[in-house]
Image (cartoon, rainbow over all chains, first blue to last red; front, side, top):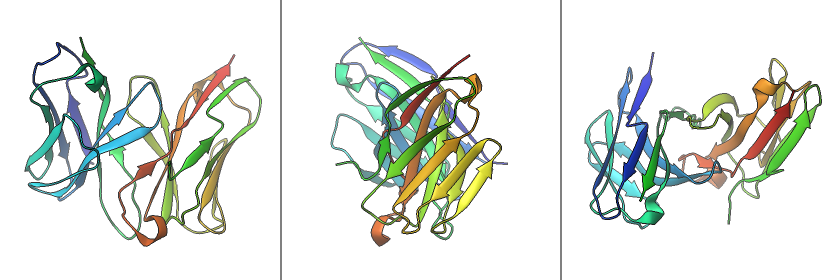
Length: 114
Length: 113
């Protein structure tokens, strides 16, 4: 069965510090991978998605970047965090078969920038 | 502008009551998913609907996809405290476009014992 791991679960970082959140998927090949951010328990904002190694699309211009160095690894990074980067970050994967876009999520990372 | 509009945004009810939440769009979707999310955790997929007019049941939850595949509803019968959470709808293939899942803002449900 497929599993997705995301870490860390919580993170408190000072303004101006770097960020690296990691996500890995097991049990599947060539997944589509996504990073979402969720504010205050509301809807999900798509930040980045990837359809393959080193193929990253950015949905929102911001202080963050994403990389996919391996098929099942997706990393969210920042060189210098801003206060506004605080939030709940979710990694997800999906497989495109037919027209179904079911997504499966990691447990999330609560990031607080202080 | 949100591609998927969910209503109501918040719902607070007593155990045993019935409720319906809605997910509406002006776009046609190839498929639509419903998720439930508990605080501090990732959303968990409940169901996918694909065919216009489709109805799916998951115990006390009934999901319906509109005939035109632009809207969906989730009906919960005899709600229980364990149903508390954020209900999110998501769709892909809007109007023949991208299959990247697009999420609504969610309905936050609290069921009081």
